[in-house]
Length: 300
Figure 1 (cartoon, rainbow, N blue to C red):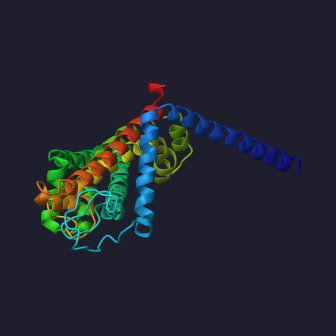
Figure 2 (figure 1 turned 180 degrees about the vertical axis):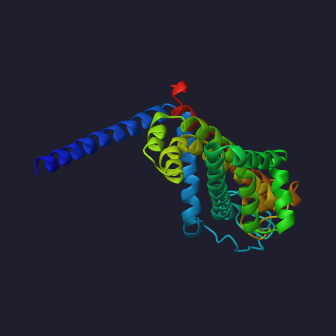
Figure 3 (figure 1 turned 90 degrees about the horizontal axis):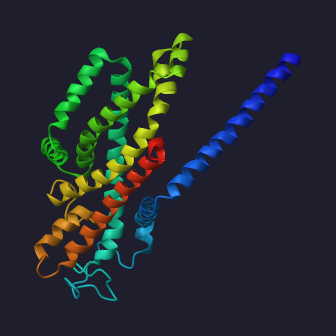
């Protein structure tokens, strides 16, 4: 009974000690992050865009597919703050609703590419040898092509459509994560706690995912944030070229492609989608820079 009470006291003490440490780390992170004004502003903008994408179908003043043939190619006005397109559809409403399609496409593609890249990077860095050489040589082949050209090649092979655009964006996302996570794994697997786990007889799979993987999360988060911006740009570019969403769908890239035919008569059809894509990609990149500077101890 005495030993049981002692063990319980130790567990309570350990648990009570871990919680304040975790809370202090979160507070320290928030305190450092708030100092980076551009990252904070970028985060606020991203949250606003995501919220608008979620609630836009219920709050926009016009249905995105509602034509108005009495107001074709109208410039910005009180009735249509960002003007109308060649069918009289409200550009603002279509852009806000289209954010759901553009952001979800980029987010899903980045998540899939991240998952595959992280697994491949962990295997390459932890096991080394044949697996390291095989995975890294495959990544080198993919790195030989610019992202957008690789995405166009993938879509040209498997066909057009938003699902195939997601696959294409995920494909060129994989090698960057594989290389970054491999580098982090090579560093983490030499840590003393990993050696202790190995000496205790833990299986490689447990060491890899329980002890090594948490040490790579910092690098993964920073790169993930930046790659979302790249994915938005790539998905919009593919839609602009006609490989993604149809021109009738409220997608940012498709709307940009649609508006180029009326650049002289209705420049607002290109201006507002272009600005929205630019600001969103910039916000994700600035947020990634802020997270990197906050999480990197050398920058503090």
